[in-house]
Image: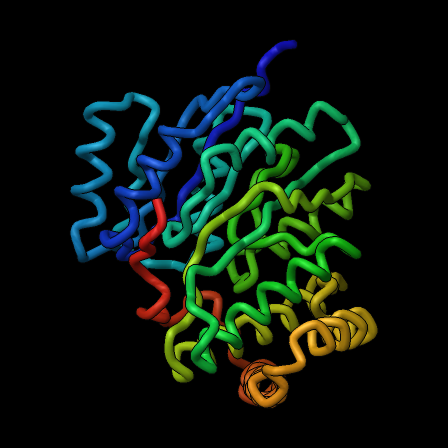
Length: 297
């Protein structure tokens, strides 16, 4: 079997706490049918030493290439820099504040042997402890994301796709969803791969939770208006269906569950106000600092 060659794009903004762990995790991937050709790190006006760390890795691994932006123009603009530089037919896009499990890239690229598959995504697993309210809320949302993706693929945090387009809208605040829309428009299929684990870290305080969730809601409203595309997490019928099952499965946490519903509803309301009333499109957003520095390796 001919190996499937891929390029990896890491989008980084002040990721000094995690970028070294991430590059190491990519270098240590267990690969059999997949070949990693290039690893591009698009660094957007980093001021914390991220570029220095990447350069040291690049000196020892010729596959690693730093693309340093002097000005921060948003994640989607950085993704377009990666798309312009990429050489392979299959691309992996990963945020700088995540860590893939050792076989994740293999599992995400192998499905492209089927020409009908246009995009794949793995399962984000937060390392937040669930005994606190905010930790429970983070784990609940990502578990709902998992259950939802099993019904209707919803891909995020780390995705792979065929290089069938040259750019995404630079004013998109939901880049993976924008790629989903393009892939769907090309009549290609999405595939969720729950065995492909991506470790991430959700917010550790309510302020960061609200900052992150309202931005995502505003981004999805923008996508619906501009591309007439709606991700599955915006489907109330699916959301209510899986939420009921989750509540029944973990009935002892009913007050945390209800609190999360109230908090998420508040964030969605804020996102709606931001986009519909205040005409804000947060494609260049403030970082939620508590989501950085993962401990898993």
